[in-house]
Image (tube, rainbow, N blue to C red; front, side, top):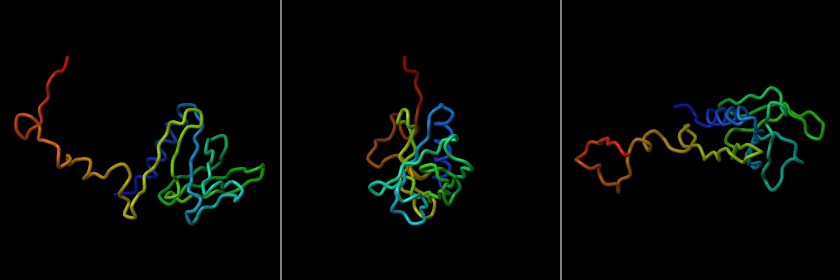
Length: 138
């Protein structure tokens, strides 16, 4: 399977922008390959405004996130490896998502397919045998 992180990041980005909010990403500045102005880093983290009004040429692919931005009025080509993105959220509401660690093979995140389909071992089987049943609740 392909990595989940770029898809999740793009989906949350679109949702935040479509909600007329300002998308920000929180980045772990200790990750190798990060290219941001050093003065933007605070306590090993950097928060970036990635709204369409703040950046140009935003690209999110399997390797990273890149855009042209301005810091203190000076243009800067930003590059963030996707494994450095800790969270994406709306500045106005705080709504968004913390992105969990992703394994090298592209698996990870909230759950993998096997985990999503298998019930926990300590969960009792459904009533009436092994088959699930539906009932109307009023």
